[in-house]
Length: 330
Ligand code: DGY
Image (tube, rainbow, N blue to C red; front, top):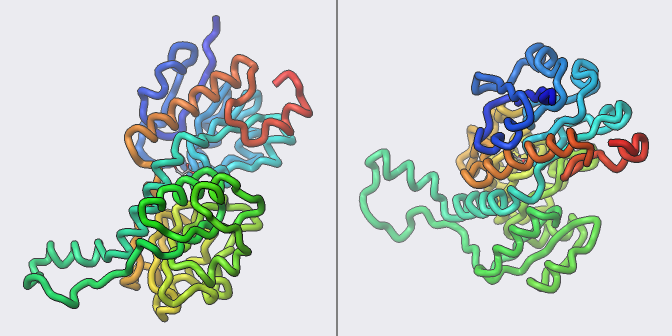
């Protein structure tokens, strides 16, 4: 039987591709860097399936270059890099990797929250510089976490996981979402509130919405101004949901106390204003970067491709219902 022809746009944990390799010829970008646009357009040609990354823009042009493709499997839960409309018009199914990275990303939100609240990075730098003169009652005084109010913006899988992890810290939990989350309300007594009320009342605001036209710059000069001057913003979701220029200004002017950011507008660029202020902790989009999670993401992306090939349609579809309506055979 002819093997399917698969391309992977960057090296991912190869153990996750074992099953795929049994039935497919798998070619992987040999260099540990994103493909250029030209390379992407060239390498998708003639493939049955492609595993893409959040750094690959998969639009109509790429889809046309991949004529005959059975589907793109995105190695990420976020799919703002995929043009859903173009894919659906071309009857190309798309998948993502939800579920398998929920806990790792929620843990990273907590890691940032604590790093900011307890000033870990600043104090670690002092240790390494040799400047520490011994214990001092006024050194590196941070903020309390236990008993404070946690505001979850977007109570989907990851937002819910982060909120549930707050149990040990006896926090009051507010959430803003279009739909109610009965699990959060039952487990934590969490309250669904309007976004603006969440901003006004929370000590820690954590972002968990996807990047879409309606969430672009959800956090801007106007909405950041609603937050408490003592509050912290955590973003492990996507750059672009926060207006980084407005955030840098709010941090510089201490209109909010601090921020912990894993994602940035225009990655890998970081707004220069964010690099200048001391009250922000910056990490390089690593929320899902644990051994188990990255392997599970590879497995799921591979399983999605196999499901494209055997006609089941993606296991974790992004646009499949629309595709199915048009082509019931997918
Ligand atoms: C995702 O999956 O969307 C993360 O941002 C990267 O793992």
